[in-house]
Length: 99
Image (cartoon, rainbow, N blue to C red):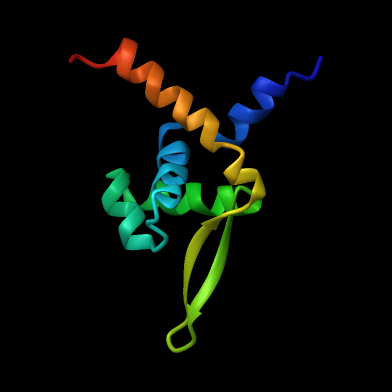
């Protein structure tokens, strides 16, 4: 039977996807900012950002014509992930990190 948790994990169920969403939420919209904030390998980050755009979690917006450059912004779908990230942060603070 279809499981919404499994379906959600197909979209955002890896480390780099959620960290990319976190970076965009925190105001880091450009590729270099997201890369620096996540520490992800370049090829993985590129793949995750592309997948998040295709899934409708992020959108690309062109901010420069020559050469063409885009940045990333949360969609409504991405905004609805913020409570999930907040809950993961609180859980991680309580159970996954040392004081």
